[in-house]
Length: 417
Image (cartoon, rainbow, N blue to C red; front, side, top):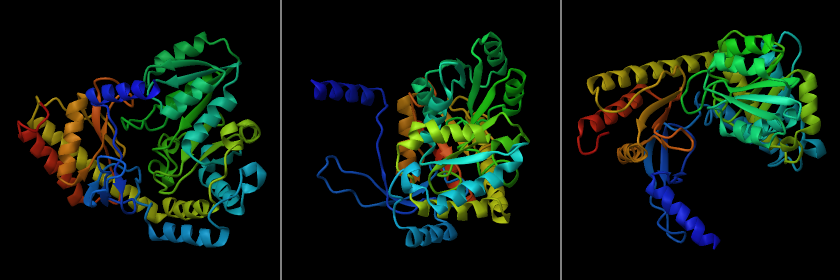
C-alpha cells in the first residue's frame, strides 16, 4: 500500500537524520526575522513567533526589503495588476518584461564581444531545464560538473543528449573527456559559484577549453550575479572574461532580492530557446510587477549603492572567516572544518548528519537560524551548516554567531564530538 510504503521511507529518513522541517517566516526577508513553526498535527495552532537572527537567506545584498524595490513592486502592481494572465507567447509578455530583458542585456553587454540577447524565465530552475532540454539533443554531449545545482542535473537527465560528469573543477579530466568526444556539439555546464560549498568554478580555464575544443560554456551564475565582478556583473566579470561562446543563466531572487531568472547568449541561441524551450513556452509569465521591482534592484546593483553593499558584504565575509579560523585553531580536534570560500556562502563542515542537525538546533535555541544541509543535497559524510551572509548583517550580528559557535565548542555535552 502506498501510504505504508511512504511511511516506512519517512521513518528511515528520520532515523538517518535526514528529515526536513519547514519553518514559517513571519516578516520580510532580512537578518532580524520573526519565525514560527507548525504544531504537531495539521489541526494544531502554530506556536507564537520567535525573533531570530537569520544566516540562511540568499538575499546577499539585502535588497529583498529595500524601500525602493518594495515601492517599485507596489507601483508595478497598481499599474499592471497582480498577474500576467498567460504565457509569454500568448499574451503574458508585457512592456515591463521587455524593459527588464533589455536592461539586463545592456548591463551585461561587456561580457560579449558581439551582440547578445536576454530571455526571461519564471525561476532559475525553469531556465536551467529549458537550457538543457532545448540545447541537449541527440547530437550533443553535456559535460557537467559533479557538484552542479540540482536543476542542471535534472535538466541534463531530461535532455536527449549524452551526459558526462567530470570531477568537481577538474579541468584536466574535462579536457580528456572533450578529446574523446565524438558528437558534433559540446556544452560545458557549470555553476559559477557552487551553492553548497561557495567556491568558484575556474571559468577562465573552462572558457579556454571551450574555445580550444569547439564547445560552448554554460554558466549558472545564480550565486555570483550582483555580488561579484565590476558593477556586480557576476562570476564571468570576476574573471575578466568576454567571449561569444558564453551562455549565462542568472537568477533574480538572490542578490536581486526579487524573483525570476534569465538566459543571455548569442541571439540565435536565445531565439531557439524562445521557439522550443518547453519550460518557457508552457508556463504563465511572471507578474509584470516583479519585473518593475527587479528594474529598481538593478539600478541599485549597478550603481554606487551596489558598490557599497558589495564592500559591506566582503567585510562580513572576512569577519566570519577570521573568527571561525580562530575558533578551529583553538579546538584542533573538534572535527569541524571550513573549506575555502570567498563568497557569501560559508559552509562549516560537521560530517555526521545527526551532529549537524543537533548543532543547528543548538543555534536555533540561541535565536540563530542557520540550516543544517545533509545528503542527498551534499555528499555523504559532508553534512554542514550552510552560513550565508548579507550586506544587511551588522558586525555585532556576525560576532553573536561566532560567540554561540564558540560556546558549542567549549561544551562537551553539546559540542561537536
